[in-house]
Amino acid sequence: MRSAVLAATVDVLTEQGLAGTTVGAVARAAGVHETSVYRRWGTRENLILEALTEQLDAAMPVPDTGYVRDDLATYFGALARLLATAQGEALLRLSVERDDTLPDRRLPYWTERLERGAVMVRRGVERGELAPDTDPGLVIEAVSGALFTRALISGAPLDEHLATRLVDLTLTGALPRTPAGP
Amino acid sequence: MRSAVLAATVDVLTEQGLAGTTVGAVARAAGVHETSVYRRWGTRENLILEALTEQLDAAMPVPDTGYVRDDLATYFGALARLLATAQGEALLRLSVERDDTLPDRRLPYWTERLERGAVMVRRGVERGELAPDTDPGLVIEAVSGALFTRALISGAPLDEHLATRLVDLTLTGALPRTPAGP
Image (tube, rainbow over the protein chains, first blue to last red):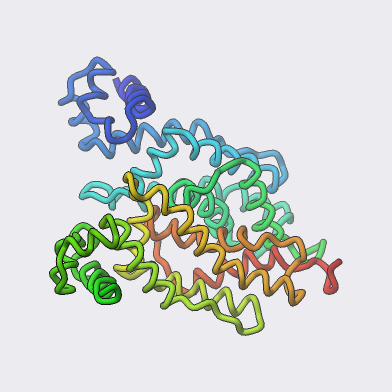
């Protein structure tokens, strides 16, 4: 039942948008009782967050090419593409909505996503591609923050080229000054 | 009348939050007729955006110390402080809200704010502090995007130290590789 409901949630979101994604609509699409959905997920927000998280994490595997620049360009290129889709937009909107159920989940949710990305930077530090005092989370925040801001606030266009330029700007700063760092 | 209404808007926002900032509440606080406010600003959103823009631009003068790093650290330190206030929070929330009146104003609004910040980077390029091919807007987006994202999405803490660390990460990337760049 879990995967059927989560898949139905993504379908309804894609077709109806965030406002149309009610527990009732999802239950009908999945062929289950509304009460079963509430019993398992508690709130509409929890349901949507879990459905989108699964989908987006699956669409954004963390690459491991052996080169930090390639890993980050691939990863954030995928993020830029996703943020331009109805699901990406819904995930962002849901993340900025505040209600009684969400404040508890936003920070852990985004901390976990940030940590997924930071693994790529950490590997680059271990390989000596980046300065030893690089803050992995800060690199991820600088690149992803600019992408999120375009999607949510400014409405400026999002594309993979932008992601690559942000990675290059941020990474060049993170590169060791001398070829063989301390 | 204009400045009285804008000042009243900021007062009501600070006391009542975004949801409580209706045209009626602002008109009462300013001692003017509600219809006068609608005649001049058209919508509640336009009124709030104009009031916050004036206040935030006044609170965030663009520094010109002669050093790009100091300019940016001061400017974004002020942004980090502002985003932690009720007005900064309201401006961000209003910027992500979508209704029939806002899409027209969001992009020009944020483009203008971005351009204000880019001036500091451009001066750094002219002084030879930064590489000649530096993209001024991209530097501003990388730093501000991470701050906006903490305020809006992750809920992680915002402070001036974070702003300085982001400036340093991004700038070091923008610095010329050789002391005398091409």
